[in-house]
Amino acid sequence: MPQKKIKQAVALKYDKQNDDAPRVAAKGKGQVAEKIIELAKKHDIPIKDDPDLIALLSSLEINEEIPSEIYVAVAELLAFVYSANTGKASR
Image (cartoon, rainbow, N blue to C red; front, side):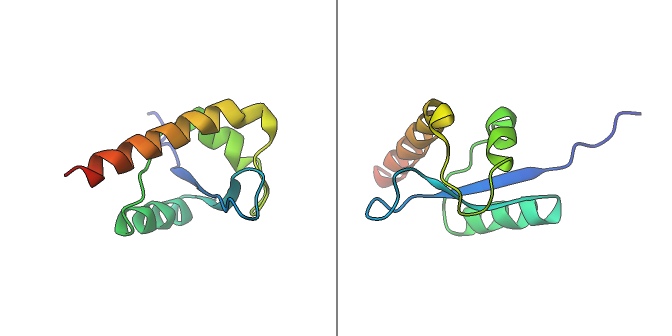
């Protein structure tokens, strides 16, 4: 019988006044991941399911800036968020 995969989540934040790159704001597995996702939905924050990116970001510490090696992956995520937000604004 295949094991149920444990849910993981990572939240990013970016303050263009103080940060050179986005930072890990929260991360967790299981119930913590569920709470991160619940809060994102409650605040209408777009969610992207990308297990590979989550695996990379989960290795970072809370408040750690993302390394330049994964800028492209995070840029794709930010493009997704921008697109999702633009779609909501036009409704």
